[in-house]
Length: 365
Image 1 (cartoon, rainbow, N blue to C red):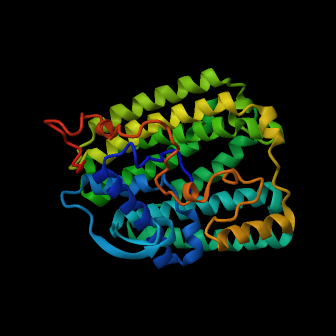
Image 2 (cartoon, rainbow, N blue to C red; image 1 turned 45 degrees about the vertical axis):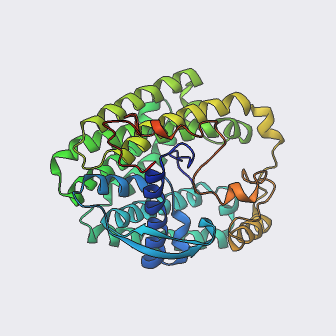
């Protein structure tokens, strides 16, 4: 799993967390059912926001279906979302993942320098791109802005003298297009402009936080990082993140939603937690500490370890993997719990003062 919005089960109301997991598992199963098991690799937390936003705007809740037991749910069954929003999330995830794979091949990153690996990655990327585009077409969504964003991002990273916000612009455009289309699916076209603004701010935030989290490692390995390329320090990056958070919060408040709780919990509260988490990590993860972490050696050894990790559902992790030191229980916890000390604080998950009069989150805590 990857993404900046990783709600903790201990800080999210029981009802909202159940809804969140229904969208998460629904996305994973939609990818499997329509595009095969391998496509489940693109399941990500941030892509779920498309599904959540679609359901939040519809009068009736999205239909559910009963899913079989899964290892990532502790071998328990669950009711998962089965709706157009989940299919849109799957489409977006596939198209962007395909673009990222092609970017790795073009740059010759690590394992992708090998011809056989590069050829296999190109085939997977072509399949995912075709599958994502087909699903998008069935939903009336033009995937063009997503594929264009990936190409533009590659070109911008090779262009010197650009500002930080110029580098984040393709990501902003891609997320804005996906967010905007949720209004079309939900039948609320008057939300399109506001959702586009929300997507732009969230895309900027996601890009910046990814750069902040990767900065020590990128410096140690001599890899490209937008903060280093533009000479932006962490204080400057934090200001940009705070501005994006404010814009995102104001956009969410302006939306016409049938159900506010989960959207506010994710796009307001959890997005704020993501910023706090990313910048707190920079105080502990010095470049020297990153240098001591083993580096992925690439080649056949890396491929074998990746295969073994997939075959064991993540139980095995090589020593250069970020999850290597975490316990098996925490690896299988899809809730994103990181022992943040917020346990029992679920009554502020939606920002409305849950459990009191006037609560609008719809939770069952």
